[in-house]
Length: 538
Image 1 (cartoon, rainbow, N blue to C red):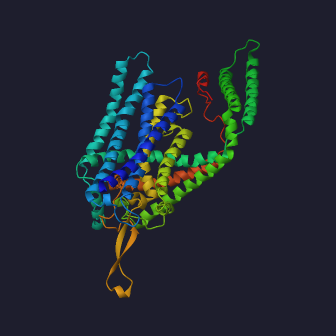
Image 2 (spheres, rainbow, N blue to C red; image 1 turned 180 degrees about the horizontal axis):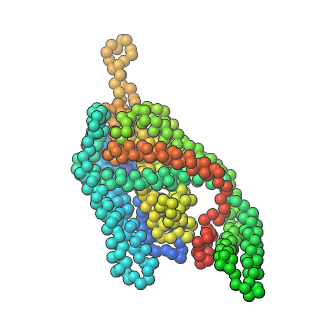
Image 3 (cartoon, one colour; image 1 turned 60 degrees about the horizontal axis):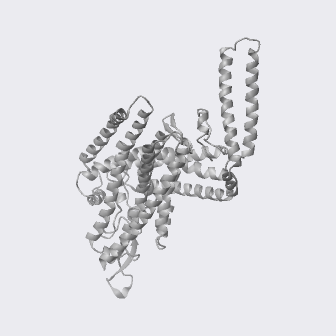
């Protein structure tokens, strides 16, 4: 009977994960095909981009499954279900999730340090028509070796860095942290993988501060503000064309008598002719946009977009407030900077954490909410990357545009999303620390009876799992243990959360000050070729 219950409970959790997996694969195919350039596409880069994006989303989907499985081991009254009453059985469930993390994190390392760099450099070498296939592979491998060496160095450092308490550590607190880590095993494999993933998570933290924070502000405000009128843009574009043509005629009139134009006038003429080409392309795109049915449908759905925009901005503000309270809680009640700001449970009222705990009695609302939060971070990251493009400090490397994104840009996009997903788990933990650590688990606590007749008898009361719970009564999620394997990374993540809050507020101000975007935003740029119009199909 217990074995059948165990099988049914596991099937529920992993069945949900399988359905989510199929949805993710379909979404990745549609998303990559939407942005992929029709003229400048390559099969190997397309497959790589779809697989890398799918891995990123699948990894993010494992967090709700982790929370679901540890929570489903118990009844609402705090007692273990029959199939989970045995410590060995619970260990098997936890090991299954742990192996899932092992697999996905290993695949992420493979993608970031080998697969994506190789495909990227292979495609870069293909731009040279004089290079044969063998030379392409050799040159791509040569550049990829550098990434592999970095990965090997991180694995070796992680395998042999001692996990010891910092000087002056509170022994009681550190012993509890150490006990949790011991649950993961004492081999060198886990620390090596955890250190490598944590190092990549630091890069992901920078991407979250840059792209996700901006995406959380720009996506809802774009929905609220909408786009400019197509008719008005066409009129404005026509006036600009007439003005530029008039300036070109004035310059050409200077050489009617046979005199050559000065070097300054020739430069001005070239600039004006280039500007005229861009305006003419804008005119063609505006004509298509005005006649296309999507514009009419978009106008009809305008109220829905406004409602969604208001909802998303409220969600963003809720996340920011929850993150601020969580960071403030760590600053006031954790052991401090030298200990990674590790804290058990919550001491200040965190609205998102309380909301998740309040939804626990109504299955499966809390799991749906944590899944929505995870996907919200991914979608806002995508929105931020699309609006900003891919930058290296102050240098803009690539643009992300529908049906016109280069294969290299798609590979960069997927690598950035892989790194962002790694940091997303810590962000969600910061938003709802108690829930991410224990899920909806409760335990039975013994308290003295208040009835004078019963004497020294005790009564059992149901409590939500927290740091005060007995070690064998509450199961910690594998996500939490991975996040806090090395205390010094936790310290950096803590300050990264403050930077994220600041970046979001700055992005919110910038997005509010900007006007409505064009209905053909990003479709026409000065550095596009005339041939690029042919690949854009509405």
